[in-house]
Image 1 (tube, chains in turn yellow, orange):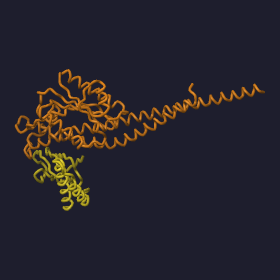
Image 2: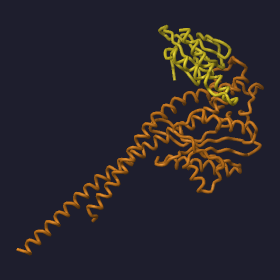
Image 3: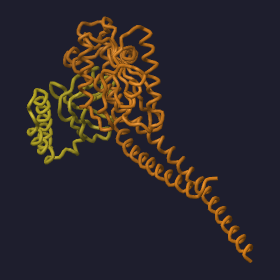
Image 4: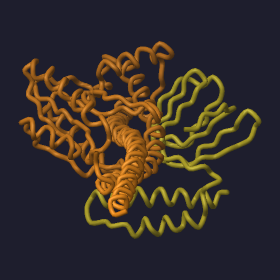
Length: 118
Length: 296
C-alpha cells in the first residue's frame, strides 16, 4: 500500500488520462492500464504502472484501487520485451484462454511502450 | 521404578517427536511469513473496494441505474450456501475446532429458521468432522492450501454469483478465521452475497456523509457491473488468505508449545535416567561387596 501526500496526480482512467489537482470535484471512475504520475510535496515526480481498477476522488483525497502496481523505476525494457514474447506464446484454445492472452499481450505492450517513453 | 533401558527408550522417542515438532514449527514460520504478507497486503485492497462499493450503493440508492442482481435481496428459494473454510492438515491447536464450533452455531441458527442449507466445506479436517456428524456435504474442496492464488478462487466466486443471479440461492455465508495480527485471529462469519447487506449500508452512510455528489465515469451501471464482481471475488479470496495465515499462526504456536513440552520431558527423563543409573551402580557394587565378603 502506498500512502503519500501529493501536489497533483495524473492517472489512466478507462477513457484516457485524467489529471487531479487540489479541490477537484468528487469523482468515481473506472481505471485503464498505464502510467500514473504524481508529484510529492518536494515537487519530485514519481511514476507507477497500474493495471485497471477503480479511482475515487473526494475531500482532496485520491484513492486508487488496482490489482497491480509496479514502480516506474522497476520497469525494465528487456523484461517487458520478454513478457510480450511470453504473452504471445500463451495458449488460445478456449475463449477464456484467448481473453487471458489478450490481456497479457495488452499489458506487456503497455509496459514496452512505457520503457520506450523513459 | 522404570529400568534404565526403558527410560532411554522413552527419551529417544520423545527426542524424535521433538525433532518433528521443531521442524513443523520452522515450516509453519516460513509459510506464515509468506501468507502474512498476502493477508495484510490484501486487506486494504478488499476494504477499499468494499468502501467504494458502499459509497456507490448509498449515493445511488433508489435510482434505476443502481440496479444489480447481486445487490438485491433474494427470498424465494429459502436456500442458503454455507461455506466453511478449515485446514487440510491437523496439529494446529484449536484452529479447526473453534471454527467448527462457530460454523455449528451458525448452522443451528439457520436450521431453526427453517432454511434449506447447502453445506460446502474446504479442508479435510472440516470434511471429516461434518461427515462423522452426519451432515451432507455435497461439495468438498481439498485443493486450497498455502499456495492458493486469486485465480484458484475466482471460479468458486463466479459460481456463487451465477447461482445468486439466477435466484437459486438466497444467501452465501462464509465461516472462516479472520486474521488480525501475527498473534491474533478469530473465527468469523461473512455474508458474501447479497453484497448490499447491512455492513455495506452502514459503511456507505458514513461515506456519503462526507460526500454526496459524485461524478461517475463511465455510467454508474457500468462501474457497478465491474466493481461488484471484483468486490465479491476479492472478499472471498481474502477469507481464504486470512484462514491460511491464521492456520500457520496456530500451527506455529501449537508446535512451539509441543517442542517446549518435549524439551521439558527430556530433561525430566534425563534426571530419572541418571538416578536409575546411579541406583543400578550402587546395587551392583553392593552385590560385589556382599559377594566378596561372603567369599572372604
